[in-house]
Amino acid sequence: MPIVTEAELREQLGVPRRGAVLAVPAGARLTPAADDLVRAWELELAEAGGVDAAAGPTSGREPPLPGTGREPPAAGTPSRATGQAWDRPGRFPVVFEGEVPTCHSCGSAVRDKPSHLTQLDAHRFAPKTDPRIRLRGRLDSLHALTLAVAARARGEGYTDTAGHLDTLAAYCRELLAAEYHARAPGALALAGLDEATIHHASHHPQEAVGLPHLVPDATHPETLHWLNVLRCQVREAEVLVLDAYPPERDHTEVARGLARAVNRLSSGVYVLELRLAAAIDGGDR
Image (cartoon, rainbow, N blue to C red; front, side):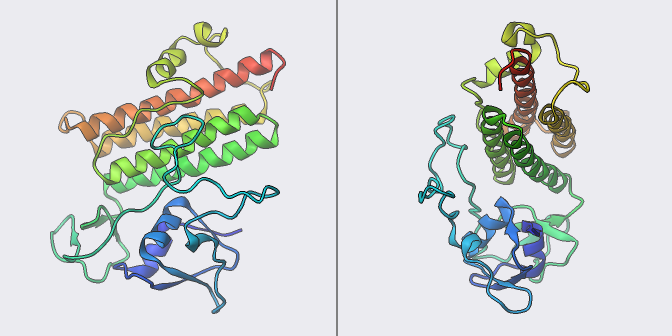
């Protein structure tokens, strides 16, 4: 099944126009950011070749949950899992109305977006090599990987781990939104643990789950190895935060908040690894 990203839609769209018609492959699914863009600008999607695309992505809501007849919570409804404001479906709140956006590098107006530029915020475009754009790309990848690992966990029967990964995926969206809007992210909460407890548990696993620090090996299930891959990717994202917001020059709340939040996200993934290892050690799932 083809996946359509926000960047691919923007390549077609150029300067956003409400109600514009964009072509997508037959049977395509949208990433969360692409779905937000479609809803914000009331875009119409048509299959390449002229057949209308499925209405699902443009409706702003997912279809009813299979076998239940129930719809998922409306956008903006906090998750029952954490109760955090960020634990909800994402939306794309940017509206390009009023002044023409400008180039972040040269300051000139961008009336027809060239392919080497992308949206930095509601008023500016920047080169795709800009450190902030690189960081967003990694955060977008983390969101996708988190959901993929959750699917793998469900496939192996680790439903609790899968549910907690859904929470971390929502937090990845929170990091993207916070970076875009130049604000500090909300605090992480996971599996009934607050941010401070998550951080402490990641440094004191014996106290937290009764196991020493984890070194994955061939005896562990695939889900645990994918959790470890996710943890490594979050650690790499920490480096990109420091590239985009150098701590020696940028002392803003945004810079400090993003650095802290991505570090705590790494702790959260590691805590899930530890909890899964402890459950396996105890013969539980």
